Length: 96
Image (cartoon, rainbow, N blue to C red; front, side, top):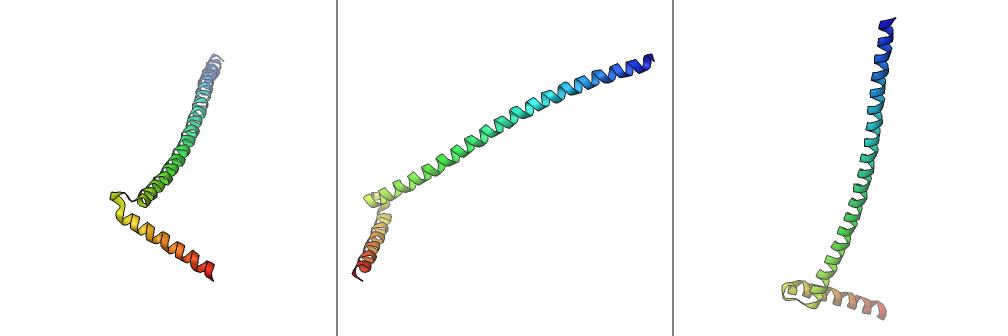
């Protein structure tokens, strides 16, 4: 019987160690899941900020083109021609 008692005690110790390790791993898994969610949230915020900045950049390019900066003379002329065509189209629609 002594061998059976030792075997049971050994199994109880192993079970206790396994249970403790499982609890530790579950806790670590939850911490990592929380951290991952924070990173995903931060990533979404960064993507949104990038979209906003790209929109602002395009607006600034348009403003520079309209204002006629030396660097964007060609773009300015194209933008003015585009605006003139739009105005002509609107006038044509009004006169019909």
